[in-house]
Image (cartoon, rainbow, N blue to C red):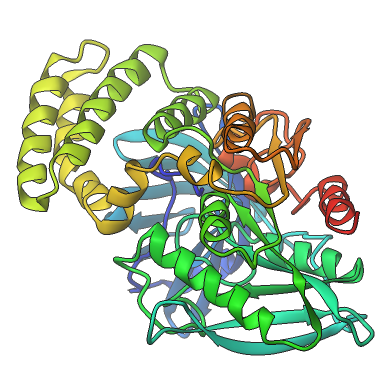
Length: 467
């Protein structure tokens, strides 16, 4: 599941410009540098262009998969420049050092960090060596199919190996958050890479845009894990109708939240002949989220005492949300709890506590919604115990979002408790939540790692399916 804690840098801004003076041309082009935030480095790219007397700027945060962010105000002088991004409370002020470097400071959220940008000789691009490029040695077909939920048509891509079949087939189910058919994030396309690999190993693959995303119908906002399971089951039903597919060998591969959905679909649809769980949770989601926040916080340099106080508050807020089904009443109770508990914090300054309280209404909107209410009450063990088909479960040992040591044993135990002995468990050494090789596992590194998906794990998946 994608990181639930607040991303530090930049999402959606409104474009505007200021009139630049004649010196603006010296700033034209792309500039790149590293922003060090509590031990984590984030690449920031500034793109400056001039049209007439006006200067336009955009920002890229490639490590987070964010590109083309408009800057609201850009002011240039003879010796430097100033950028203002009030919607995220960010500013950048720098002096020009020669013609090739901007030396300055990035300010955001009351904190200031050194940020030096170097002029690039060519436009910035990221290297994704595993991303497949046409022509492909297999058939790729744009398809549409109906969700199990009435009135929702989903769009996707079906890749078929060479030959007439019938082929083994899998449906790919993405993690939390709005995802396209490639599960695209931070300029990686894990499902594109995985589908390409599996199809070249003789396995047909159906991947699709989430409802309300890309070319799929329906509405993403307000949908829950149960709704996404209906969509995945619709994908299975579609494959059952294709003559090229072996109806006795259709499986579901779920990543992160998709690893919760796969057992749900398999437990209620016996046409699913196997499932593959990639970084699938086994813990109750309240425990999972707290572990996730703690581990990613430590990796990002957060103070332990502050994490302890924050997590204690989280546990109280989660419990209140679960106990109180009425949204308005839950908001009132959670706000009262936050005011009382934050007031007692000893590891935060008064200014930090005031900031937390000021931002609390935003946090409420993020959690008081149908998806989070469903997710926070989920116990994956319940559906795992009802899953009787063969299961392959793979978790990376440096995964900070779904820690392998805590989740894999629960997944295996729940499956076997339900009488399923067709279980294969793999601890993938040195791999993070996206199955990239990573020492720290910090989600802030996902975009900076060139590898999209461990080839070793893809070989293990294909080998297990084709066994």
